[in-house]
Image 1: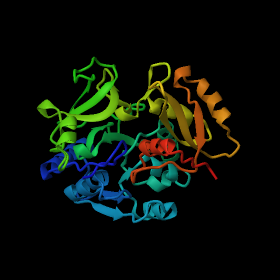
Image 2: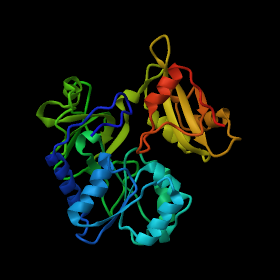
Image 3: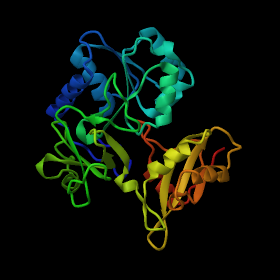
Image 4: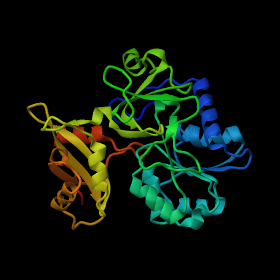
Length: 349
């Protein structure tokens, strides 16, 4: 399974049958889907490990029915299928959940037992609005291609902890480590490492990257910055490679600035990158998609000042009609960085 390539060149994660079957059993244990009863809505690509495992493989394992959606971007067709086939398990990515919000209501999910979301970070405001509109609490999880993919998930039919990716699933260990690989105390921010039977064997024909990702004793370095609370719930802070070194010398996590921008009522998408300066530090630039042309950069900066310290403030704002994304809707920050270096401004129309 090739990785999404969000931070660089895509790599082939070598997943054995035992890795995939382990993740199936872990998720069946977590969600307890009924045998020969469930109907799975397959709105995500099945050639990607998220759709393949969480939709296709679990469906086959429990003898369920799978409803294929050839073009999930066709929202009217997707809603027609929801109303006609009444799926009990719906797997989404945040971008698709956001599009559904404008057209669906509680009746469209009348038969649904689980609404599962992954692929990229789920904004808390989207989770709240989805619950208000449909009556369903989205179950957010976390995973990566290198782990077949799921390692964490919130509790089904239980408490979805605010902005948390949940707990490690069955037979999965997780810890937060510093730059030397030493485990950090609870609450401190560091890199998330995971270990379990779903972890890959390595990267295909890439021993250098394999040695970087796979650590002694079977640990996988995810490349994600995270923290854990006293109840064992984990929270993703940002991608390690996306972290920005501000002009004040402090680390800035793009996701924090993006979350603040998303609080503005007219912002529907946001991405933040660092622009390299001569002294080695980075200036913060925000890319946004808005619903109203009347919104100005100054409006957004004024909004940000209410929530952010001065060193976390964007210095530039660029408006877009859309942001570059992977097939699963994850924003490609590296594409924005390349465009910035080559000076390719793509303004909103």
